[in-house]
Image (cartoon, rainbow, N blue to C red; front, top):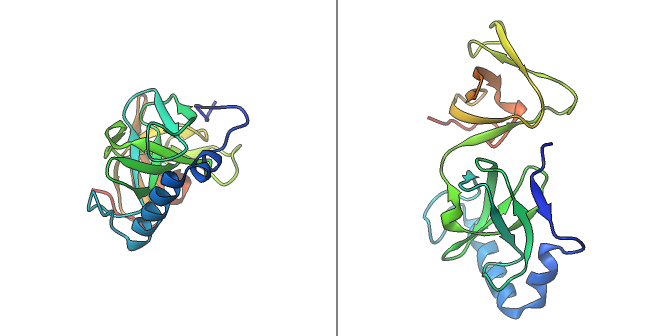
Length: 182
């Protein structure tokens, strides 16, 4: 099972955010921050990938604890994309495109990625080198979670409990195409 977010039935993050005027102000501020390319509070690039620290993260409909919990992510290390920020809150997007707000201390700069082939039934070859002619050392299924060790812009070295090798960067969700990770 790839998705580990327990969604609250019949609720959407935007419903709560639109219901509260303070939420609209936070959303407008955060949206502007996301378009600048640098987070106004963190000073870090925007958007950017991070991962979830704990194995239980409440995702809120807006950037306060007063906003309804719309989802509970239950997978530590899951990569998420920060798309906006306020003082202490970050709007995140998961691999399915769902968005919501989490408290900043629940996020880690540790880079992880999910195996994400275009065809979800396709196995992704893990190679011993960053070369299409490398030896296949494993075949990974869609949804496998991996630590990103480094990326060249076209290849990423990833590792997990029983694997370590190279995959084409385009086969991952958690790194941008052409992004270099050291």
